[in-house]
Image 1 (cartoon, rainbow, N blue to C red):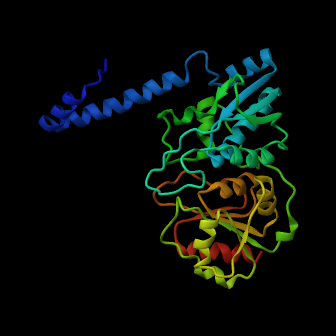
Image 2 (cartoon, rainbow, N blue to C red):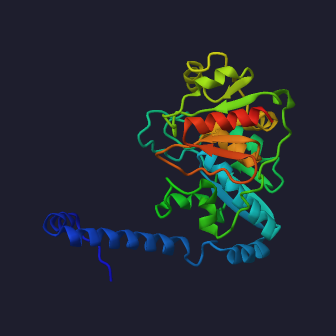
Image 3 (tube, one colour):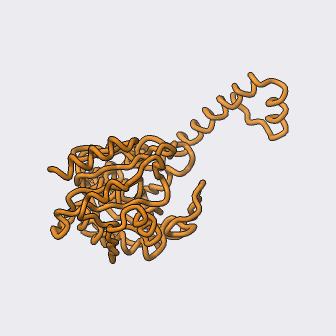
Amino acid sequence: MFKKKNLFSKLWLKHTDKILYKQYKWELKNHKQLEFANFITEAEKLTSPAKIIEYAKKNNKVCLSHSGNAGDIIYALPTIKRIKEITNVRIELYLRLGQPLILSGYDTHPLGNVMLNERMAEMLIALLKPQPYLDTVEIHVDQTIDIDLDYFRAGGIPLDKGNIARWCSYLTGINPELWKSWVTVEPDKTYANTIVMARSERYRNYTINYKFLNDYKNIVFIGVESEYKDIKKTIPHIKWIQVNDFMEMAQIIAGSKFFIGNQSFPFSIAESLKVPRVLETSFEVINVVPEGENGYDFFFQEHLESIVKMLDNK
């Protein structure tokens, strides 16, 4: 049976027997993964389709919670949508506010040091409430929760690789249909000939230069002011669109000619809508994957420019 070593024992082993130390680290990693698996799949948690369906039949509803970030919530929706489809009961989603945000290697984030605040939640609720598979979307106060979708942060799922849209499916055993759209809105057709762009300060591919977009006349930016000022240095004629809520943002993206963005919240909306979309992929963290029709991603400048040209000529 595996036994954890104290700090002194680990340091002693590291300096006296490097081979055994590497073996210990491997066994420790396996032990942590086993602990996480046992924690997630313990009997009282709704961690399989069978458990969820049985619970739904008895209670006629399933209550879920999520604390953000906003993009993570968008990527949780296809799993929630599938739960609705297999249970056909009332689905209630509650947003937890104020959970701490750890910024690794980045100086700033639009929400500071929390994953979701009240203003962001209200902007998000405007988009989520009309979705037909969500019967209730509210800020969490003291409501009883059946499935806590934050468990993916408990340490057993690698968050820097794979696909964010599958994190909640790993917890529940529900297979989301990621090739289908999971958010529907009325497109804002005034942007039908416009390229919509977003580029957050995080998850950038620093080999990419968007200067070539100066050859495209109709282009707007959706994002915070600091991000807009940054991209305007490269594309002086780009216009900044400020939205009142994320329903408005989704309608603009849905009505656009196509969308360009990095691994940020606006791209999660574009992905959920399955509009023509181009993803700037970060070399450091690759955990967003366009799935289904109209999805493109790239690492290199040449590929970006060819994709944009192709979409613009459609």
